[in-house]
Amino acid sequence: GSDASLGDQVAHKITGIDPGAGIMNATQKAIDDYGLSDWTLLESSSAAMTASLDKAIKKKEPIIVTGWTPHWMFAKYDLKYLEDPKKSYGEAEEIHTIARLGLKEDKPEAYQFLDNFQWTEDEMGEIMVAIQEGTAPEKAAADFAEAHPDRIAEWTDGIAPVSGDTITLALVNWDSEVASTNLAKYVLHEKLGYTVKELQVDAGPMWLGVAQGDADATLAAWLPLTHADYWAKYQDKVEDLGANMTGVKTGLVVPAYVEATSIEDLVD
Ligand SMILES: C[SH](C)CC(=O)O
Image (cartoon, rainbow, N blue to C red; front, side, top):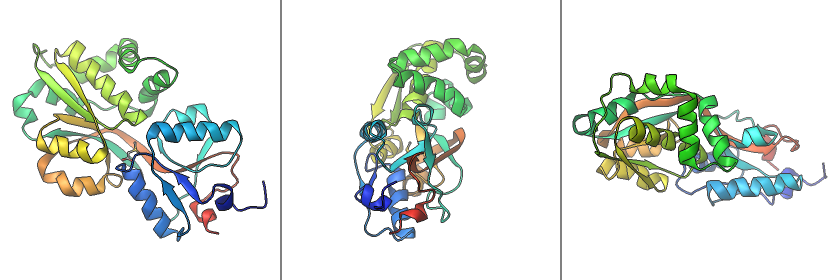
């Protein structure tokens, strides 16, 4: 590599995603924890971050992005997490399903499915990669359901279909949550008879929307650390249905050709 520090090579910039995302708070905390005072976290979006990553990798240039697992970028590129010895990004995280208060009484069939639903990184990956390769999200979800009838049966076992009730699912446009929300949409509509609406917003309005009942549920709650601030604010106004995926993580991600191995290497 060149003599310039990694910081100089990336102009002391970390390429982030949408400002309301918890990973952005965690990254600000990492900047404080590791004394990266001369670094800047760029706010953009999940799609803009992956576009910047693609551009840098095509030119074999260094880049540092806010990344998370599961994500299709790990299947597409040779990437690594920078070690986080100070645990600014926490330990193993989970993605939770959060329901509005009263959903269990109003729409027990939808509630039961959402409570049952839990899947793996590999299963989410099938949908996420298909979408990234150009399949429409609804089609990618339908294809997954057709390939895994046993799992669909497991999640809907004993639930009687309804006729035409509406369910609104809130999400943020993160690749992982586009996959899980489209699968839930497929099951709720095709198997349980609901009309499903999506409320695609930033993380703050997503939590507020469930707390106020504008949305019935979200499958996009990253806990315990990533959305800790939102949980602290809304925990009495929502119902946590538990994890829809365990063993997930967030952190700073670089192409494998970047020599740094730890966030500590960013200190000039
Ligand atoms: C899918 S992103 C890690 C979630 C978040 O940062 O709030």
